Image (cartoon, rainbow, N blue to C red; front, side, top):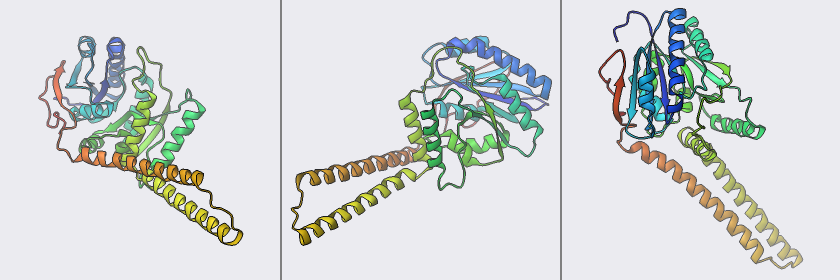
Length: 328
């Protein structure tokens, strides 16, 4: 890209966002004008179609203006992978990651860019969801999740921080060098390090459609995080097994004491069933948890690309597809 001034790349993955295409393209145009005026930077837009089943890519291609490209993946690989596909295409001095559903506002984006431009000692500015709309139970579960996953780590995954962030080019190159097949971006952003700063924000209401994240998706995503970045679940199950063994030992001592000194008959069926159910449940839980870790290890050991590009649509500036676009 033959630009003499600094370039801001905007990476935005999307999946079935045809209804919000026009509004998001208009937001990008407004953001581009503001970035050019305030910071003197050129803007290149990199959208990633994560296997949409509607005409999202076509609508975006009709609505976008200026320098842009749409990377269309061969199928739905998930948002975590779609973000990597966009970062692989990025060559800008600064990169902004945002969603295409209009929940990430222009004001917060400009605030993060300004923080990064004005603070040369900071490498990453990330938006931290203040979760004002979240219920008390969900807030407590989120707090418990981050407390567990951050225990015994040399780095901390910030609570309620997602992909909405601004990074310098060096950070992007570091992230694209991490070719995990099972990706948990929250953990990868934290693992990569660099000097990071948080900015609180409240997500905007969706322009259309509904969230792609169900409760089951969130549970699976949380489990993905644990199996990728924490051994705490295994330690919890191991500790539970030790406590169960200790409880059995104490109960056995109690029964022996009662039989030897008081002649009390040993209870049979109920105590036996409790022991079988308890120990059987612990064993099956541990076996299933180990299976999750083994599956992650197996997925990482296969020599498959992280994603596959179907094709790339381009706007004003045409460039060759850079190395790594196949997702290797």
